[in-house]
Image (cartoon, rainbow, N blue to C red):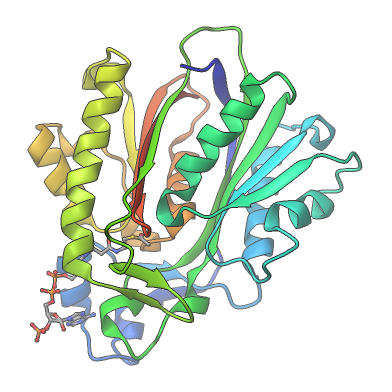
Length: 304
Ligand code: ACO
């Protein structure tokens, strides 16, 4: 348990909307197939922005939302699998774009769609070490760069966007807890080389299993019930996956907030985008849960 709190949230999604009907002109698919199998109606596509721009614009939104002074940030962690260059890191470039003058710690994390939950735990642990006071944690993805528009199995599922949070230490106790793990026996099931490749059925089964397990475990570890949590913010990959988890844990679907219809799967960006859309500056306890390539999975309980 760490005394860490979310003090600001923000997001950025590109303007260009790509509907299911638009994609049906590119690959052999239909709005009916995509919506009924996934819950996705449309997704965003970055035309001029790259992963760095998306990250910067989400960070800027987060900072502006609470008038945060960038000079207070002394750690930046970006979760992404779509960075343009191997180095410098997106986090390092974001610090420059934000105009941060001090020399602070910056790095990226790769844990695919679980990246944001991993980044939250890593940043929280660094804050707890006492060496840092304020961390900007970002999930940013330009997935349309790694989509094969001849593969209808994958190109209909993903979109671009970014979300960000600022976290700080708090004197209130029992604020945050995490579980983050990976499995080494499913490396081939979802890969991103030049393009995303995946075995959709295996991903689906894995997702339902680990999302259910993670929600149960993090509640039990914190001696909480689902009623102690205001909302579940799950990685947005497929509405059917979320319905199946809700069903197996006997949690009302209303407890899960959703935006998959608008953005599709934005990998490491999906949880912070959703968090930002949920945040209305009311106190609340959120349970975040994700899964992704690797395979990785994780959950976090934090307070807003
Ligand atoms: N339009 C029309 N038909 C399609 C499309 C499409 N876009 N894509 C696949 N099909 C076809 C298939 O070719 C198959 O045809 P066939 O029976 O003639 O071979 C048929 O539809 C049925 O395919 P299924 O795989 O049985 O469809 P399913 O109901 O399993 O749904 C889906 C596929 C949506 C991919 C599902 O398996 C899924 O959501 N899996 C999880 C995916 C996921 O979450 N990925 C990302 C997670 S990790 C991360 O976020 C990076």
